[in-house]
Length: 61
Image (cartoon, rainbow, N blue to C red; front, side, top):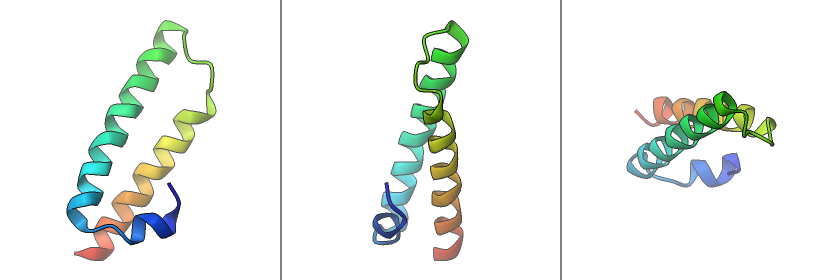
């Protein structure tokens, strides 16, 4: 998701999005552990988006 779209969300929406991202990151880690991960760049994308959401949550407080 783009930064502009994330900025338009409220703190509650960002928290729920953060939960979804953590679930996605866990699923990607399990795929990597079992050798099923094809798109290895997805791990990096999710990790960076988690950092962006955490930064925005800190700014909104």
